Amino acid sequence: MTSADQAFANLSLDSWHYERWFLPPADQSIHPIVNEIEQHISSRHLELHPFFSLAESSKLALELWVCQELVMTNAFSQIVLAAASSIVNVHLRAMLSEVAFGEHGVFRNGAARRAHPWLLNQLRESMGIAMDAVKPAGPTLRFIRRLVEASAKPLSGVAAIGVGNERLIIPEYTAIKKCFAKCAPIVNYDEFLDANLSEDVGHSQLCYELASAMIAMGASVEEYRKAAIASVDSRIAYFDELLLLASGK
Image (cartoon, rainbow, N blue to C red):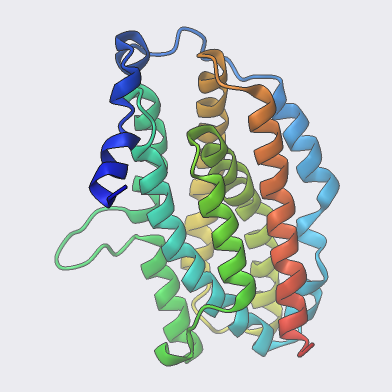
């Protein structure tokens, strides 16, 4: 199959169903599965991961986090756009497109100055990290690979994007912000972290609403449950690996 064949197949025109493509979901209430996912998130305590304890006193660990987050946030922005395009219903597609827009902002006067990858680039500059020092590490590549694999299916993609990324950004960035305040207080970390923290509360809720609407329209609750829990565990595994890398092991 050529890339054009695959792109055409992804439009799902062979399973055309007018109502599913064009009508808004009749049931827009939050599905009870969301409470179960929230309980799992709380039980994993990402904000207490030992990596953050190390980063409170290690500028090298902070630099490692910034370098790998640069790789991750740019790839994530691309993945969200691709995932939005895979949703056939125009109203549901708009919901994930809103998340993608939040990641990018608008292009004005030569740059997308509120794009999250660009704000993180400003943090890199303020830390004096050379561009050549930013290279994908194994833990990051493996995490992104898991995210791409999950995003091969629309509902699993919404789970991985909304739970394992947007929702978990909240405890992660809250913890890393405390690390910057203790270990590197003079660098420009607030702008990037605050932009994400303020937006991702809304983005994660929007993804919960999107998943609930997809389930109401016939998508599998069990598929969403498995993908959401796997996405939480995937991010914990990423920090397990990142800690080993930062510790020189």
